[in-house]
Image (tube, rainbow, N blue to C red; front, side):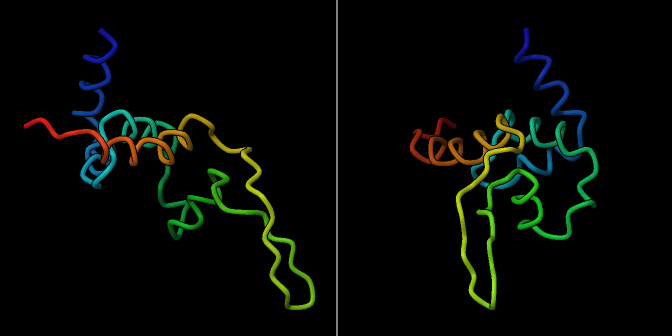
Length: 97
């Protein structure tokens, strides 16, 4: 039942279909990102999107020295998990056509 609703929403959402066209992203990840990010124009680059999800390390720079800290993990935990863990799993799975 939930799978059918998810696939139906994915079929109606242009953003979700566009995201699913990216290799490594499936229907679940595409719908989660499309539902979470309501205005993709707020990000000028992929790095800004990664920073919004807190996938980039914290910067503590002084005097021209760049020091990168840890990742804060404060962003959307579910979407971050889908983007980080999902693609390696999907490439390890055999394709069924």
